[in-house]
Amino acid sequence: MKKNKSRFLLMTVAVIYFAACSDDSNSWSAKDVCPEDGVNAYGMANRGTFIDERDGQEYRYTTIGDQVWMAQNLNYVAEYSACYDNNELNCDLWGRLYSLLEDGRTSGPMNYAMVDSICPTGWHVPSEQEWTRMIATIGKYNDKETAKRLKSTELWTHEYSGGNGIDECGFRTLPGGVQQPSGSVHMYQNALFLTSTMRTSGLAYAIFIGMDVDEVSSTHKNSVRCIKN
Image (cartoon, rainbow, N blue to C red; front, top):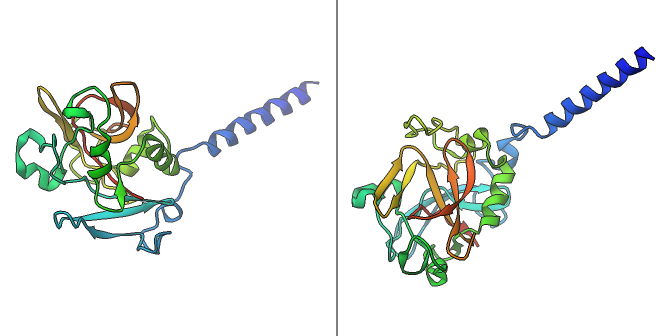
């Protein structure tokens, strides 16, 4: 009887162990999920650049799963957008910070005319669901390793930033901070990206990347990453 109980306990431990391993956020391969070489479903190279015909700016992009994402922050001059600390030089590296709500407010209804026009032709502001799909492709929410896969390999110098990333998919998240009504904050510490999805009647979803990855409510001007249509 004791032998059977011991055997049962060993089998139970083994099942728990292998189940935990199968849920390990590290059990993935960048070569499979976001290969640097090859061609994506759009017939484009998996990684490359394109030109925004509106202002001639060139942007990098990367392919993650079956999605194609801009690999740097949008820097298109739009109403209610701003550069960090209102310094135009900051936009060259960090891109611009945007509000997608009506009248550029911190809360209120979504400005869908802005949402539909802010990205280059052939690209759009991703929904919360599109962000979640990408994050699930390389890891999961509330996970430090997933954040590292999305973060750039430099500039994450703040003590609460979680440190530099490994940028395995070439997404190159920069710690560009945000702009609140009281001023710009959190550069070198975290990044927040706007989505086109409302979380409540007055607040939209935003994606937080810093120590980990999370969904939060947008209450100030954040960065934008466009996704290909």
